[in-house]
Image (tube, rainbow, N blue to C red; front, side):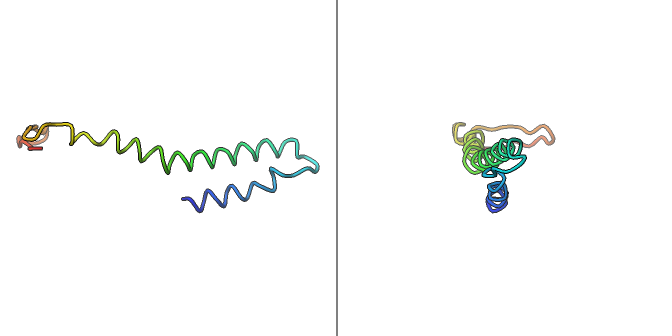
Length: 79
């Protein structure tokens, strides 16, 4: 995924640096696409794993010996 984002960003660099005919439309578009690819890559690499770790750390918050019953079966699960 990181390689894909890098290649996509590098592919838009010539468009972002263009000064010829039509550059008044291409430059803002390329800038937005490059910024979006970079920000989505950073969010995927850093923010999503942090959120996952934060939201799925519930096993550590229950005291040892707490039991839960599941809805599908009549078994109890010890934590």
